[in-house]
Length: 306
Image (cartoon, rainbow, N blue to C red; front, side, top):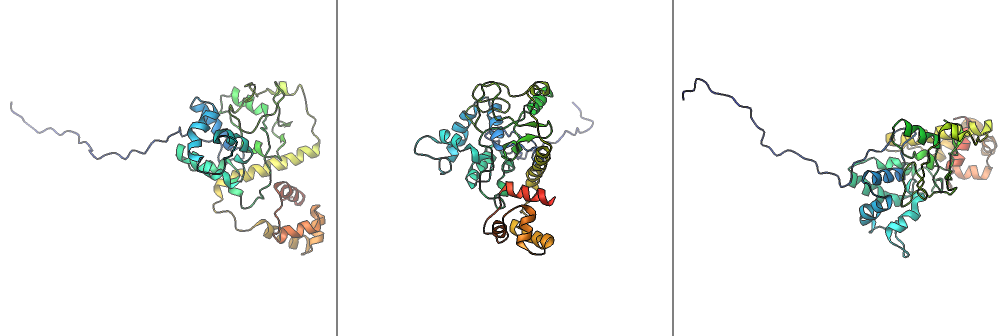
């Protein structure tokens, strides 16, 4: 057979492709990072368990516990790590350094690097380590119902975990802390935790605005104003966390001292009276002998309108 011309065929790249190692757990995306309604870590773990079609307890026991056994964070003489883990749920969304190992474990298993923003850990150096989280789950049933109807992700915002947030200002309603069906409270994190459902009776916690309004809660105008302030400022704090690295160098005591000079010409007693706090406590904050709590900081900023 006679060939009149040469054919040119496509060339193949025989170099070995650079294939990234897969994550051990599904790399579920957290909701709302960088917004006031950032998802909390307990919600993320519960959703991660749901994605793997197992209970939250099984996920903790089989996927997380093996990596945490070397740590003292969740250890106890009275039970296994999976049992003790759920007795420490009040710290998981907070600022305790004990949750760092848990966050690193979840980051490595899901190949994420932003899960610390699902907690208040970024503010650990600025906020005193006093309890400022709800000891039980708190939620807005109208949000749950609306998300469900609009086929949006059901999750728990970190904002709902904060003790000072007692009202959903968007729906003019107190947040719920008791199941409307079995009338019990729920731990922040439980073996059968699922966002939107009560872990004990497994009932759906979403309620329409019409159903919620059957039991109206009268809110005073001052309470609405205060809760709106609290929600806005704590939401801003949560939203700002991913963008503040490193944290601002000015500390709380330096800022307060500056305001003493601006508002009261350096007179501690006058400034203390202005913010409604004792002179000695205010002096302690300015000298950095103690740190004001989140509640106190909100109160001070509210009175100074900053």
